[in-house]
Length: 128
Image 1 (cartoon, rainbow, N blue to C red):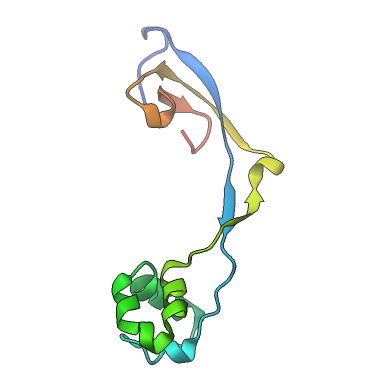
Image 2 (cartoon, helix red, strand yellow):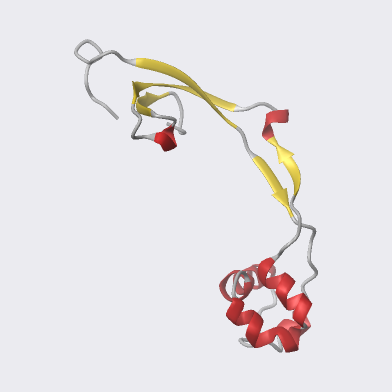
């Protein structure tokens, strides 16, 4: 953020920004915990948070886990568990409920394309 006085700066600009959130998910895939206990490495937990940790650390997006366990867990089922493929169905779109909006002061800056070609000096909320 700039500490310069608006009295001494070059021209300054204001703009309004908005953000929305959309969320989509695949259809749920049933997890066979009994089969996971026979996999390498075996799942040994009993709680939901332990299962999530095992899935994120060992299974999700792991071709190695798939190769090691496709016979134990089942080829198609292991593939689905590793990659959680399927079409995504949108279930939340905040544009239907409103948006978060704010204003920013700053200057146009083509180098900052990720920020909409704008160098923000100050903003009216956390998104700035």
